[in-house]
Length: 311
Image 1 (cartoon, rainbow, N blue to C red):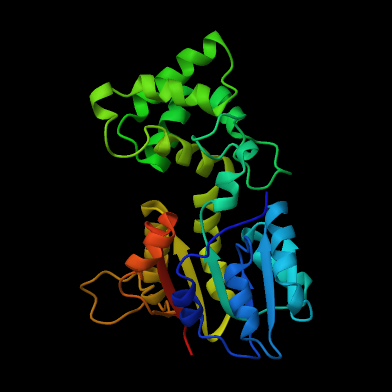
Image 2 (image 1 turned 180 degrees about the vertical axis):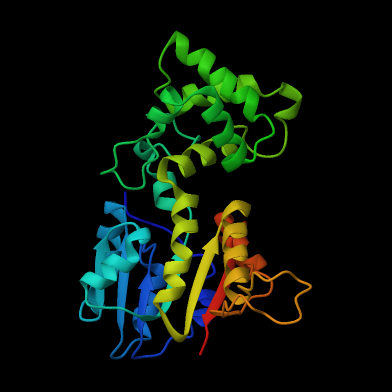
């Protein structure tokens, strides 16, 4: 299967990066290289570093960006190691960073990866297949309380308690090894009248387990300050999110970087000494236009936020 993935909010992200022909840019979630290609096209003496943890993405992006091999460096890693990856390349500051979060169309549609509830296959969900922890390990090994918190916090599912209870009850009979086994368990945990409308009953639980398996929110939360610190004055950080949890983390981090003062609101002057790191360019997130959503249903929940480092 070829790595196909429509880059979401492509035009808006490229505009948001404010690319300088001789600048250094990082795509921390390279994927198939759609955004990276548009960055590379705009570089003359500049450089692009592409990072991804998925070997299929690395192969696809390498092919797509072959024409720019003189200015593009591709590294297989998680973007949480961005600072280290750049340091090893002798780079200590950059002009722009891009993240396109979540799971790619390719990952969802590659059946054996086990990301989708639409196909019957083994439970996997690892974005980096060098990692040992899989969705199967979480479903069969985590306690009922842990499963409840994962499904409630990461899936925002109102039936989290019941789903966790059903998973634990069923795995006592036999191990839960496939996506369809898990589908059936989730279905039986949700009252029939609540299963009509609102999308597939497994959607939220699958999202939650995937996020937990790949530590997606922790990585994002722990890396945002590092990324801002890496930017040159006037450099920009563009982040595309696909659900409210990611978006909230980005929005709050950007807000804090713009206004880091910790003094009580009634203090007449600031005495904490915390200086703003820059400014939020997007007061409200940029959303895909109707035409894009029609062309690519997966763009529907995308939001782009942009932060600019203090000049």
